[in-house]
Image (tube, rainbow, N blue to C red; front, side, top):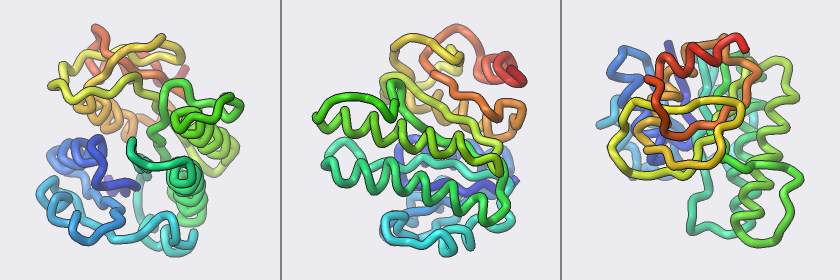
Length: 218
């Protein structure tokens, strides 16, 4: 498969790129800064320098043409203000989805957040973030041209992955290593029977492949 990842230098994205490249997939990661390119090459991915906050749909679609799947794993990051939650976590996700439609890429996986909700109340930065992610998710759900899956991980940690997860429509809150998020994404990308599902993810007792198979087709 050829897979294009938005937010290619993110902590989850770099892990995902390594996994996909190791299994023989062709991977491209969209990054904002040219100095991040070597990290992607070391992960086995082709770096594509393109700023999703200023690019057009056509510019992004050009990078997506011929891909089998698109993964949105970009984020403004914990140090960013409310404005970038809107321009990255919402607007860049919408742009990437529109570009996938334009390029004819049906399989679309978006990394969201547990608690994401377009109707979330509050004015703190995290409230704005949850609202932005929720609005992006709602937009993607409305695109019939995409076979979308929305993944909402719990509290992200840098602990070593266990390969054991709980993946359901509702899991309740809990931690999840970024390693395991990447492993689930790698499995979801090649499991189109999970299209149309919004899934929460925390650490659990099911091996990743078993967890994905158990929700596929539901």
